Image (cartoon, rainbow, N blue to C red; front, side, top):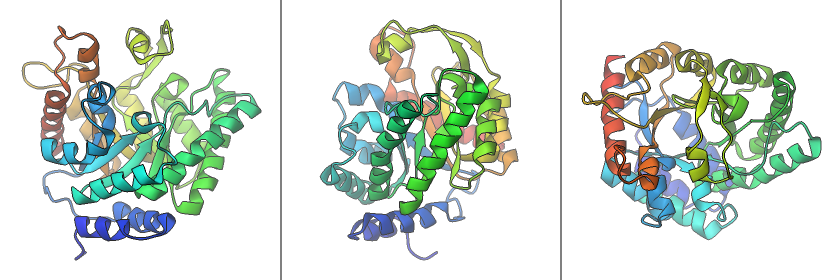
Length: 334
């Protein structure tokens, strides 16, 4: 391929039709390109949530995410979080500016991770329909940005098999809507029953569509958690996990459907290893699966430090760099 990444994204960003742009970038992002780092079998991205404390404290503008990611960390893949620009899904001026800044920094727009738009595994049809329709605007936003996919959640209350049917129904409808602009729909093991790797893999098998897949996260496998005192981030952070699904088993189950991976981290030991997850074991599983796409760093310790300044968590930037170093070490020996 002779067209370099920056020129490609810059040229497509100049087009008038958002759908045709998305289609072109979709083909480019999914192309079997050769990694610039011969020792890594994957490409490196950053989850916007890694800088959550900076966005919520207004120290960092969402429009500056591309520049920050490239200049501070040397990372090109951008994993956006809808929560940091929740009121901008239909703001074409904002989205076009974000796309321009991504292109200017030679970055890739990978996906928008969508939260807070309703329960896609809800057993009430009316509630589920509302949630499905709430996600449409984010599919449109992804098309304008040039992201080939959005990430959704499929939690729900009720019998696991009934929630799975409801989730599959929601995903099928979102995939149908996304097909108009060639936007895929993927699911993260994130909250509630979706943290059960076997259950989520079963949903993927039921949907059975190449335009659906998983965003396999190293750390989101808590299947029984205490209830938060309020529906806020800080209240949720005070909850405790009572039961966890085996994370290595879960990643193994999710990788056959994976269109992305989150290398989740919180704290590190003196040797630079994550204190909760064996990254070397994880990357062995990932490589064995044949995955060679984008691995996104998702460091959450900075958010904890924002609420507990005297804690031992690293700040956002230091945590991202520590995770990047570990990801690169583990990836090279996998």
